[in-house]
Image 1 (cartoon, one colour):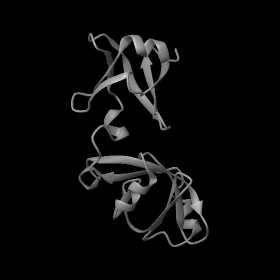
Image 2: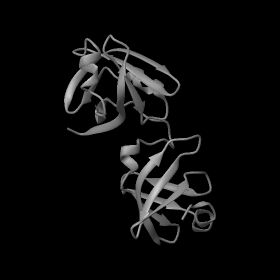
Image 3: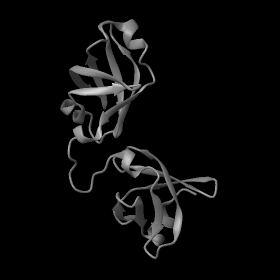
Image 4: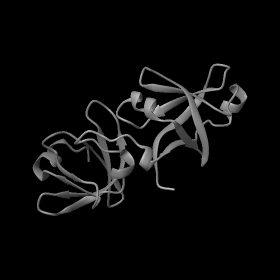
Length: 165
């Protein structure tokens, strides 16, 4: 199953089986397009979606109460890749970027992308020689993203000006 991780279940919300999700999408509103999700490999039909404060609240078939919702705490929320909404140009699914090689415009390998913290400007976490390096995925720093070849090209000078080493 070719799937994308789109969030993680934080906790039950209320007494009717609703779950609170931290989305890994640019917008919590993206969840409105999902007809079904998978939690721990199990398929659930989406019955209701609401959003607020950057979180998603889902009502799922088969999760009738708080006790059932509690069993889902901490699970990854995935969707089938072919059911994922198309993204605007310049936007990517986090799952597609993780593991990408970070290189300079001259081809110098700096490290591997291991994490993304979403913010107004995303912060990338790169692993290099056993160290974690943080840098903003800002214009001028990131020059090109090649999802197919898992390669992110950065401007070397700008990278070293803004990276937290």
